[in-house]
Length: 462
Image (cartoon, rainbow, N blue to C red; front, top):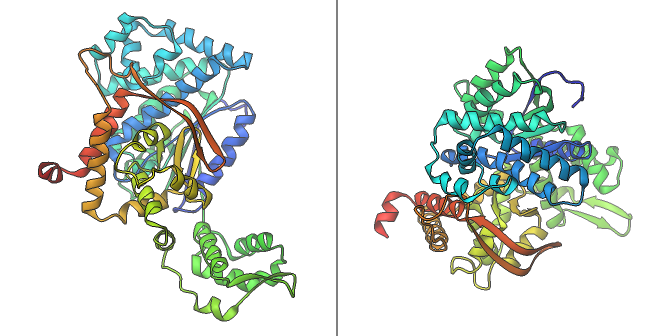
C-alpha cells in the first residue's frame, strides 16, 4: 500500500471458505479509508453467473454513488473532488457515450448535469462488449487523473463468468495499467482456491499476469489455523493461560480441521450445551471432559451451520430463506417492498430481521442486509426443497414485477426511479430513516431474474 508505487498492482487472496479472507479485507479497507483511499467492493454469487456483468457494473456504480454523496456532503475537499470528476467526465465523454454509460451506471446523470435530450437518448444507446470496455476504461482514466488512490475489490471472483473475469482482469486492467496514473489503483481479488481448477478462467488470467511487465501481482494464500493459533484465541476469550487451554484447543483444532469459522461454531456449541461453563468455585471457566469427548459435531462447517439454523422458529427460518433467494445480500429498498407482500411471514419481516442480526446470522451495512458469511447463505438456499424454492422465486418475481410501471417507449431505462418511504425501520441498533430509491429498470431486472430462477417448467405450470 505504499504511495511510491509506480505501476498497477493486483493482490490475489486465496483460501477456503471461512479462512478469513473477508475479515482481512475489511481490516485493510478500514485502514486505507483513514488514509484517504476510496475503497469499493462487490461480491459475486454462486449459481448466478449470468448476473456477473451486472455485478461488475454495480461496483462501478458504487463509485458514482460515492461521488454523489461527496458532492452534497459537508467536507469541502470531498465536494471539490466530486465536482472535478463531474466536469472531467462531461469534458471527456460526448452525449452518446454518456448515455451509453448511463445504461451500465444508472447513477451517472445524478453526478453530472443532464438534460432531456441526454435522458431520452439512453434507450437508443448502442451496446456491445467493446463499448463497455471503452466506457469503463474512460471512466477509470478520469478517476485516476485526480489524486485519490482507489482500491477495487472483487470478492468470490471464482463465481463470475469467463467474460466478466476476462473483462476486468484482462481488458480493463491492461488498459488502466498502461496509463500515466496506473499506480493510483489497486485491485484485490478474493477467491476460493479449492473451487478453481487449472482450466478456470481466473487461473488463466493469474498465469498471464504473473508474466506481465506492466502489472505487479502479489499472491496471499490463507492457510488454516494451527493448533497454537486456536489455543491463543481460546485463552484470550476465556482469560486463561495457553497452558490451561492447550488440551481443549487441541480438541477444537481436531474437530474443526483448523477452519476458524468452524472452530468458533464448535466453541459456541460447547457454551450452548454448558460443556464450557463458568465455575463460581474456581472463579474461571472450566469444561466437562466427558461431554467434550462425546460431543457430536458435523463433518464440515457448512453442516454445522445448517444444524444451528434448523433450530430457528419458522418465521425466522422463512425470513432467512427469502433473503437467501437474493444471494449474499439484499438492498433495504427491496425488503421494504417485500414487507408489504404475502410472501413474508405473518407480521412482516422487521422483527425477524432484528432477531437474526442480534444472533449474528445477518448484519446491516449501509443500505444492504447481508449474511455474515456466504456459507450461511449458500446452505440456507440449498436447504430449501426445490418446489418450495421455485415457488419462492416465482412469487418474489411476480410481486416485484407488479410494482413496476415500466414503459421503455416512454422512459429512458435507468433514469426514472421508484420512491417509497417508511418513517422508521429499526433493525437491532441500526435505524434507517427516510426514502429508499431503486431504479425501475433495476427492479424489473431483479423480478425477471427471480422468475427465470423458478425455471421454465414451473412457469408453464403457473
